[in-house]
Image (cartoon, rainbow, N blue to C red; front, side):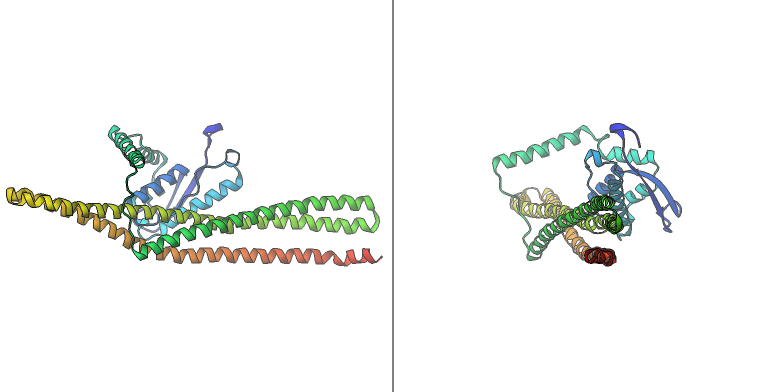
Length: 364
């Protein structure tokens, strides 16, 4: 859509459902990447503890931004993003998902504009500035790091997530190299096929026919290698890359958990500290004492419940993530092995087919 620097890609999102909460059994809307971003950010804000499905990267090299391959990879990733949300037991009930799947473009623009800050109050920006200023001051003054959760289970989870991220990233990097090498070999075979045909034409007689057949086989295998490179990209490298992104979503949830733990800890400490001072007020103003004590207790208990809720939800999410990861990665490796086996057979059959002619030439 659009032209020049204002050009962008839009996506047609088709929803089919029999749920009564939706406006009919089928709905078609047009969405931009920023709309998907809006949905992701809304869910991340409201559903603490849940691993929000990841989005594909926002930025792209300008010259590749409208390439067929890039558009299809992003479409595939966005399709996976929405379907994961729609199949999640909690996220599928979100009102924001219903807006995303049903609202017309004008309403969607209003929702997105509001969330991206067009209608934010000046006080919001002032608070943002104060937060940044406070963080900078902490660094400059060398304040102690905030307290962190240190249970054995959480340490085990952190170690697993960081190791998983490293191994997935390395596997994805090597998968990218496989795609690149398949394409390079395919191009080399195409170039070789043309060269060997010209050599045969120069020789004439029986060699021309043999070399022409070798050249044709090379060009045919070149096409197969390019197809297998595409297969590797979409069905092997991209799923691995998707799980690298998924781990980033888990790490974002771990940040929410860490923040909830710090708030829980700080409020508990505050309650203990202020409790000592409140004892002095107990005999001077009993009513005020009861009011302040109840307020402190309520805040502390609320923070504890929020932290415990995130922990419980994360445990459920981790089990779901492990089950889905095993199925998805297992399928990706199955497709990889199947594609490689077929390619190897095609290559062997092609060269085996020209051996009799080459043997006849070499013995004549």
